[in-house]
Image (cartoon, one colour):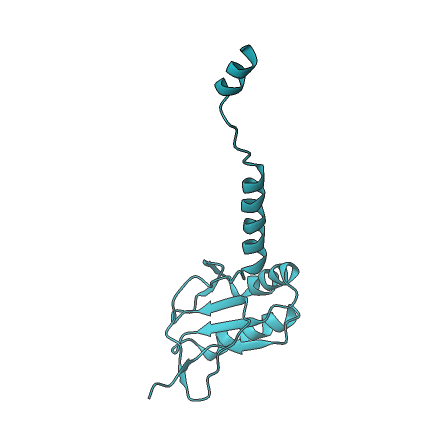
Length: 135
């Protein structure tokens, strides 16, 4: 009689190990599958171009404001710091290209200086962002 009572008194146990393993596997999958885009930090009024094309990979973004500020990774930097920042970001992802988001009224001289610093950092694939003409 005592054996029967012990069997009925114990509560059934649920093994959570397979469920926890599944959650970690899904987490790793989504981390690997997602692409991380580094935003420049400000919104600029891009110029209009009829031949503008969508660029699939532009993981390094540099924004030039109308007031002459340069933004990378949501912070304002000096033109002399562009090269060092791009080199650091290239170390993280060597296949990255650079997209320069220049405001329509930004100075061309500053755009050329930024593109020169990017080339000195070792990037030859540089694009200047524009929006497609509507209509």
